[in-house]
Image (cartoon, rainbow, N blue to C red):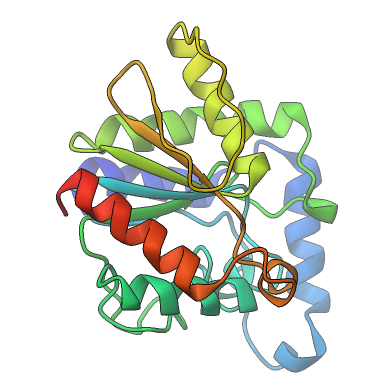
Length: 226
């Protein structure tokens, strides 16, 4: 990670612009979950991670209360993350099939993972002010990923907010709707791909499977020449 991203992440971790989110993070980190009662929670905004030369960006909406907010890494420490990193490993994007904590040796191949919102919101529902406050961080991440070719959004909310961000910067004439696995070319030559979220509910109802997710990652690798 280069110095600009490191400095950006330091700024993100110290951010307290959204009082509702600061209060909720403190509540989550103090009350904890029964199975994590003896653990020290990260309890701060969760930054993105990966390679500065990434061609692929994997984008969620926000960190999970007892996942990223506990471990300090996006999609780490919950069932959604377990599924995601098994798929990333099978697609040879991650060097290991698990993401456990910040010191577990995980490395990503030409891939960066982040969230639109850096703090967990109550009920997983951020308000517009919170999204606007965080949008400059997402914009900085995008501007630092100079070789970016593909963005995969993990759920409709992440897709909608990513599209909203690009519509502020570019004129997008064609209709772009959320449809799992569909490829959309944005005006700046980045390909946007919506995906179902790797949540236990979606996995258990077979809305998404390992085969589907690995196939999507492999297609993204081929297009971005990872």
